[in-house]
Length: 108
Image (tube, rainbow, N blue to C red; front, side, top):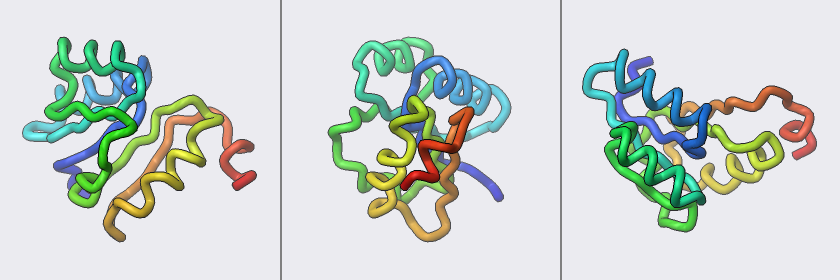
């Protein structure tokens, strides 16, 4: 699959690292950074890790244009984050997460 426009929900150390690598290795990639933490979004802006910055409280309709959404939140927030974004994505969008364990996710 050719990922040209992606969203990273959670731009801390892991999400930020993914954005940095994607920018380095995928020419022309468009990245939207989504976070509830203004400091994390400020760092993403300063380091030019994203083309667009969104707060978690912003309208997520833009996700319909993303081919990939990476959920890089703390494990306890992954399932609720996925449930929150599902109404906004297209049927072809791939969702993945960076959680180290899946027990919290399979409870949903």
